[in-house]
Every structure is written in structure tokens, then in C-alpha cells.
Amino acid sequence: MRGKLMLNRFWINLVFILIGIIFNGISMSYASKLISASNSQNMNGPKLWANNCMRCHNSRAPTEYTPNQWNTIMLHMRIQGGLTKQESKEILAYLTEASLSEFTTGTSTNTSSSNQQGTQSNEQTTSTQETTEEKSSGITVYQKNCSTCHGANGKGITSSIPDFTKKGGVLSQSPSVLLNNITNGIGSMPAKGGNSSLTDQDLQAVLDYIENTFAR
Image (cartoon, rainbow, N blue to C red; front, side, top):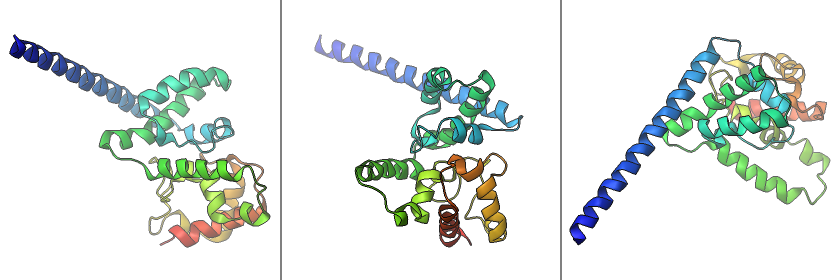
């Protein structure tokens, strides 16, 4: 009798495991189709994310949730953020592409862990007044305003975002061109990374940090 019960439990557990595998496969298949559809259009997801979401979720990394979780989140945040259907689709496509590679490989993201550490650091410092030096620190500006899309390692979290570490890449341009791009925005990147409160000193500091840290 006991052996029969153990056998029944084995088959029950096996069924649940198979259901989980099938559900995960369907979710990833849906995410892949969503990315394929978005790649046929001019993807505005990063800019829409920066302009509409980062004002409240500045430390939230796109790689923090699975594609399926982002799909559920966007159902609610579309209404909360006053987004159109098309805007929601483009933001979701961006978030899906950013998170899909992380969760299909089963690896954790440096961007996510860095942003989580940054969030804890931010919470600790909000009780004290930031000094001018802290505000203008290149690494501080980068972590708060740039790493969400460009990643803590500068490689970019999606294929549509340039890799700072690539030899002969975007950082091979002159400092004046790079500063102008940061100040006024370019492509899917909004002006000042979506944070209009950044000063000229902040922008110069973050450019110096990017060049000194990632340029090859």
C-alpha cells in the first residue's frame, strides 16, 4: 500500500513538472513573437520607457522581471501611466527583449543587481542632503540615470542600445559629439537620459566616467 502511494505521488509530481515546463515554453514563445513583431517597426520602447516610466521607477531594471511578469505589470501600468495601446506595446517589446535573454539562459543580470544595490544606497542617502560633489559624481549620475538601459557594464541591455565597450564603437566619436548626444538625445535615447534636472556639470561628469570606464 505504501509503495503504491509513493508511486502515485511520483506521477502527480511528474505531471506538475511537465505542466510547468509547457507553460514556461509558451511564455517564452509568446515573448519571442513579441520581439519579432517589434523589430519590424522603429522601436521607440527605450525612449518611451525613459520618458514615462523612469520618472517613478528610475532604479527599476528592465531585466528585473520575466517577460511574462512584465506583461502582467504593463496591463496595470498602461492605465496608471496614461499610455496609448501602441506606446504600451513598444514599451513591453523593449522590456521583453531586455529580460528574455537573462531568463532563458538562467543567469542573473549585473544591471539588475547593480540597480538593487543602487536602490538600497539611495534609500540610505535620502535621509541626508546630497552635496554638490555627490550630485556631480560621474558614477552616481550613471547609476541613477544611465545604467537602466546601458547596463552597469556599459554593454547595453538590448541589441538596440550601443555597446560602450565595443572597439571603434560610439565612444570613438569626439567628446563634443558625445556630450551633444547626451544633452539633446539621439535615436531612442531622450535628452539627458530623461532627467531634465541634470546640470551641465552632471552631464560632463557622466561623460568623463563613461569614457574613462568603458572606452577601448
